Image (cartoon, rainbow, N blue to C red; front, side, top):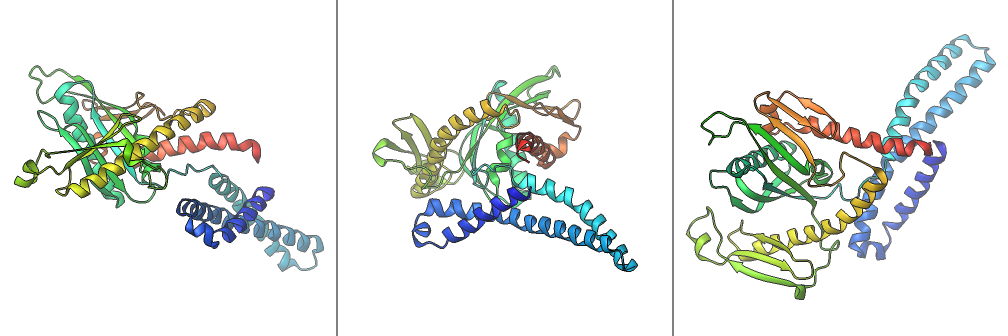
Length: 358
C-alpha cells in the first residue's frame, strides 16, 4: 500500500507542475483532463498522508511500550495502537476504492433518449412515465433537464423523446439506466382487464465538448422545418426546427424545442457531437466489456435491464437480481437506491480486478 501511495504522490506532484504551464493552459482539452486527474489524485494523497501518520504513530507507540518505564505513557501508547489498528483497515478500503480507474466520461453532462418499443400506445405512455421519473430524479439532484426533441404518442406519452441533463457527474450516474425497461400492467385502453407487457428503450450518451469531437461543416446537411407541438402561432409558421444529417455516418440529430432557429441549431449540433462521440465510446466499451465481463454497465442497449410490475408493486433490476416493492415512489423519481446498488456491484467487480495489485 505504501508503494502505491508513493507512486500516486509522485504523479500528483507532476500534475501539479503541469497545470501551471502556459502551453497546457492553452490546450483546453488537456487542461480539463489534468485538472480532473489533479482533483482525483488529491483525494488519494490526503488519505495517504493519514495512512502514513497512523503507521508512524504505531511505530512510536511500540517504542514507548518497549521502554516500559512510564505506566501512564504505556496506557496512552496502547490506546494509540488500538485506534490506529481500527482506522487503518477502513483507510485501506477507502484508498483502494479511490484507486479504482475512473471513467473519464463520468463527470460529463448527458443526452438521454427514450423510445417506445413493443406495445403500441401503451409503450408510448410508458416512455412518458419514464421521462417523468427521470425528470423528478434529476430535479431532486439539482440537475437541469432540457428537452431537445420529441414525438408525442397517439394517446399520450412519447413515441420518442430526447433531453439534455446538466450537472455534476450526470453521465456517471445515468449510464446505469441504459437498456430496455419493461412494464407489466393493465393498459388504460384495455377493456378486458388483461395485463400487457410493453417496453421502452433508454439510451444515455455523454455530452461531447467541442474539443472531444471535431465536425467538418461540409459533412453535415442542414434542413429547416416547422416545429410541431405547443408554443404559440410562431411555432407552426416559422422554419425554426433544425435537422442535421452527418453524411459520412448517416447519423441524424434534430431539435425543435426552442423558438429560435439559432438555438435549435446549437442544440442539434450538441446532440450530433454526442452521438458521434458515443459511436467511438461504444466500440471502446464493447472491447472493455469483453475483457472485463461486466454485466452492470456493459452498454448493450438491447439488454433487458428492469421490469416494473404494477400488480405486485414491484421493480426488479435483472442485472443484479434486485427487487424492490416500492413502485409508486420509484416512478416518482426515487431511483437513487437502485443506482447505488448498481454502482456498488460495478465497483466490487473493479476492486476484485485491482486486488492482485495490493
